[in-house]
Image (cartoon, rainbow, N blue to C red):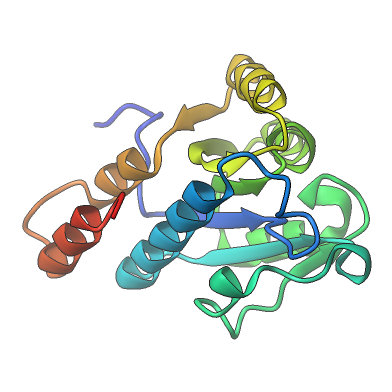
Length: 188
């Protein structure tokens, strides 16, 4: 038996939230955030973990940045006008269709869409992991306070590398060599 805060591949989904063209410029540490999201997307593709993409008002803020969209070109984004990704029924319907109860959340901004989505997910009974080195805001203080707030509310605040090791769980997996390559490329 494993602790409930250790991620498992079963029933988990990666939710990439609002990494959009017209919002990215002022984001603190945007290169690190984007690179870590790209690494997680590659990891999810390698192990078959589902990915969902969400966009806030793409008519105003543009679509997802090309660096990320190019990795998941077939994904139809969840488009909404409310900050929370639960702002319309689309996310709920997709999660129900996947029979998932665990969300791994990345994106921006931590104190706006990420925090509201996480709090709404917790209210709906989801287990939520927020990847702190794959989320950001314009101001560091907003990000820091939001991470503290969602941790107190019951979400697990974690790191990209911890997510990958927890989901992998073991070394005797068919993709272990590729996994090691992916881990080795972090920070390069």
